[in-house]
Amino acid sequence: MNAKCVAVVDDEAPVRVALGRLLRLAGYTAVTSSSSEDFLATLVHHRPDCALLDMCLPGLSGLQLQALLHAKGIALPVVFITASDDPALARKALEAGGVRVLHKPFSNVELLAAVDLALQSALPSTP
Image 1 (spheres, one colour):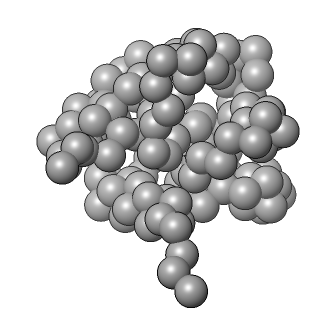
Image 2 (tube, rainbow, N blue to C red; image 1 turned 180 degrees about the horizontal axis):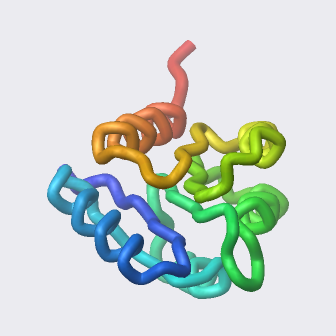
């Protein structure tokens, strides 16, 4: 069985490295990108099973990236991560289709639970 692939899109290198390492230790394949544009370029070769998107990225924000994916018909479960404590921003992320919003700093347990939830939401439903 192939490991599920989780994309990590965050402009902070230490965050990308730490999240990638955590996901690999948990048995996932992790693909990291420093921007929305870099992430979009990886979709040409491989589509992840879910994505962790920083909400505040240079260029296209995580919310803009989610909207673009939706507009292109790419159904990808998303967990948003943010350093912002703005409840309106978190609500906007959930309304945009995010599975969860995690506020930095979050625990490894919170992150892995959110990834599991996102992956479960991607499973085809049975009648």
